[in-house]
Image (tube, rainbow, N blue to C red; front, side):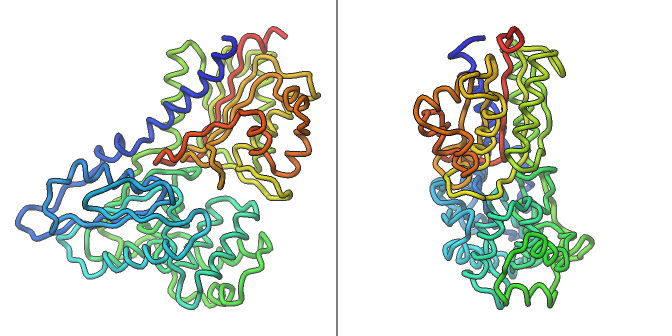
Length: 440
């Protein structure tokens, strides 16, 4: 398998991963029974996340025949991720730092589910990004104060479950509060997972599921990362009033939760395609976490093991993984976690400028199409990458130290740009080891 086939192969794997998480495919299989005819029951569709617009469209495609009096709704998604719907309103807001549009939408959603009866159905469409998009600060906390905490969390290197624990305890709608407000209506949540472990309580900070974490946990996270939170935020956490609904809360007794797309599903779809094309897939894990550059060092070691010893599989082999790495910002460069991972992997594989890593290619992308806050999904790398960079006056190690992976791969024209994919099952990484690597 020689160039340019490896790059095209890796892109096909990424496309297969995206297709497996397409809301148009995933939503219909999990739609619940509609309220019985004559019951007077209504369907209220609410939701938040980068896939919320596409999920709402999938609902309309199957339930659009219902009278307007029986089907209404509102979902909020990231700017640029909206999908035109006829019956369900789709609002765009900011991510990853919340804004006023998201706050206004969250307030409207909370109001929509209040006052419903046991014959009504709340269909909640949740996907990654929903935590920032569904932002309704707890009483006594301003949007600006919550924005400050959110920015500090993003810089801190905190894991997604830690971020969302803190977000839940600064919110009036997350951590099960949305479902509690909808009681006694039936609440059915359809979730597209973007978190390691697929925990519904972590996905978008779990607005419709019980929250096992506490105010004390949130305070500990604040202190662990040395986040200088506004006084009102710390006071709110220390007071610990009105805890989030816990497992066994009767207000959540009528709730159903369904995971309709997971990172593992996308990895398995990519693996199936790899087998069809004669390449042995090895799934390393769907929930890999840690500093992006440190994960890259480990992945480089595994790729070398394949090349040198044919373990855990002989070449041609593709190492597949998902999850969510983190980046502790130390520099001033541009780059999301996938660009950071890939630049660190390139440096690790090509130990000296110009030496190259024959036969090893890699792609790392975010399945939502946006790597961090940039306009790319991720990037792709291959043999001789550092030599090309050096010829263009780029210092890979210096750019890695400056967290500038985006600029590095942009200069080489190696960014992967998809635009919003309208889904989100977290990061997708594929490292292809060809027979050429084994022969060196």
